[in-house]
Image (cartoon, rainbow, N blue to C red; front, side, top):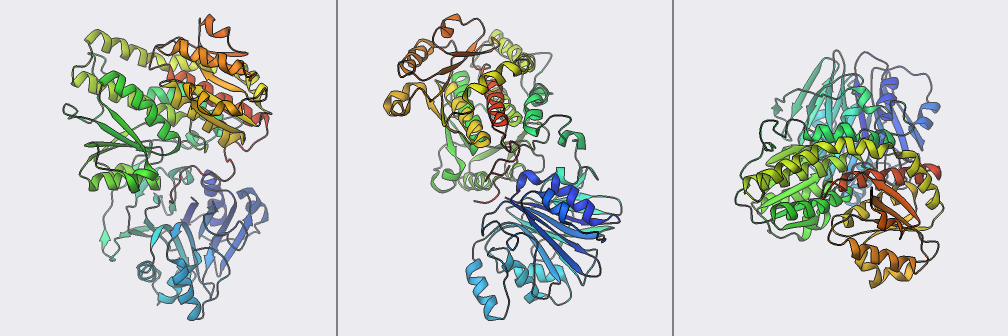
Length: 599
């Protein structure tokens, strides 16, 4: 996944593009580059963070240009592989997010025609294909060139012979237009240009935009003009800033009392026990399938425990990357969970479910995203922008939506008594306060983090709903601290993982007073017999668990399944502080990107 910016307007394009790229750095940070149109087409590239590029740029003026921040998918990290890429005559520049699947064949054909390649990337074939087709109209050349390409792409293109014009084209990779006054933008994501405008137009697959400072035209793949609706983004630029926090991740952890409230806002009736999600017809559901990747997959696993317990409807959870190839028809309803709404595997899974004739629902944070437009129904989490690569507030908001969905189904199908519905809604409304109390334990969690910061391996264990929480806790730790971490169902340790336990292998045990409480304590006792230090996350007032652990972290008392929310926040803070104590790049962990928009 990479970040793309295009600008045309009255400002100095260099300054605007660098500023926009900084807001997209979470999409890739192994190299960056810009192209500026003035009398010439000027290209500048650097390896590493955007600051390296910014520091190397000369004073240069021009009112149109492109920018790119790269997360390498093809070709090593080097200046020659950094974007933008140019044609043989250095008149056309292209930046690209995606994969050209047939690039080898195309490259050989272009070489035979005399084209010279300077990089190892698949992207470079695109600019040479456009060069082949160029007869004075860059948009026509781009459409003709793309007919030869197999794969996915979001593209931004400029041409020296057509100054002040930028082209944007997308297929299965995100690209959005920012509409300004006497200036216009294209970018991979809204935060890039939010400082300059909150007016946006969303491109659909196989659509092309042609932007000048005073006009935007959109065409389909056959060159026919398409009319698109302009929308207003409700975020403001401060929502995408650190606001005094050292890292976006910590800011986003601390935003969870608000993001949880936002996920519930307008969805719980104040007059009667009723849930409104904008989706009906749950009366005849026999089963539900959920598809997702990464943290969203673990949210789906948490949702399985919640929905099955509350509604008694069987739920099947599938990795989207597997479902897209091996998924069966299964349930009549398929729920896809994706923070960005642009995750390639999840989009493919939605398409497969629709091909089976399934009703599709997407839970996402991004209005206007591809997933939101592709699915039959959409439930927005309303979490606001999440910049840190490690998902935090969007994870808990996804769980809130799944809690609301479970209660909605239970009410519609009369699976819950009225007083129990009211009790559950009351517990839901308590969650922002409960999370605030967890955040007040920040220093205590940081102290525990110091106990495991030098570990080579950390285990996380839990039973029931705490099992996917242990998987998510392990994922958070490994992705930002680079400590090897694994999550296990507590009862499974004796089936192999016990062999890895030593006095240098800390185990984080999640303990709740449910039907597996005694069994979980027994599992902790077995771990202690192997001399591994145990950090237990337990409910306030649980004095019995404290006898089994070396270190204790308490979460405020709240019943199943709502306890999963404060526990998740504790795990997020624990991972954050371990990574911070290890001086890791928390918001931009190595080899990772925020949204995986290529397979």
